[in-house]
Image (cartoon, rainbow, N blue to C red; front, side, top):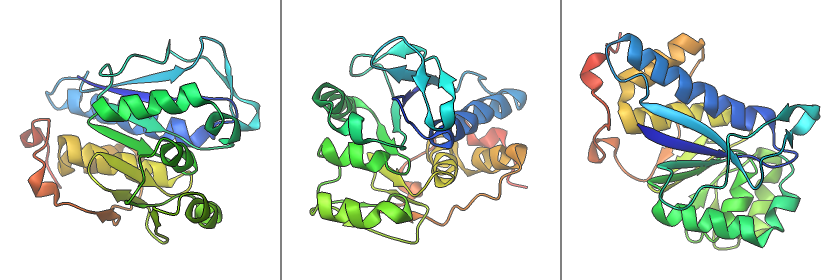
Length: 220
């Protein structure tokens, strides 16, 4: 099982966290239907406290657990939204930094890139965010190479995606990276998603063997 923590905070963008949650939970379900482990991916909503999170638009969501210790997660996803208060929380930023030191992958959706930048994770790397926030990301984190017109950027241990629905494209890419392209394609079909897999990768996926048995899936 790969443990996936999705960070929650007030004013988080709904699709930023629910899109990746749906991708990984669907991928696990599809994997199970084809003879694999249905617990391939397990998603947990994590926050600083066990109280309802008020997402953008007024949705209230109860997290699964408080911020887990470093090494409890394999993949951390940091969504966006109104991230001003979260950026000003030194304990939260320190937690992201500590998790990134131990996680296999730390990823952001939309303006979640600002939280990764505040934790020092984007220094010297290409990164992306929502098109309306790319200039602000450049100005705040001058050592980051902000790129436009790409749904996601994979730098190995750090992955960023553009605005809102691009988090779904990024999550499908991470399914491909962790469990093989056939499972990612099968997941996209199950979700009836037109997957934009044309992001930017600083490495070859061939250099990173799938974590699951890709032989269970057909690319057709």
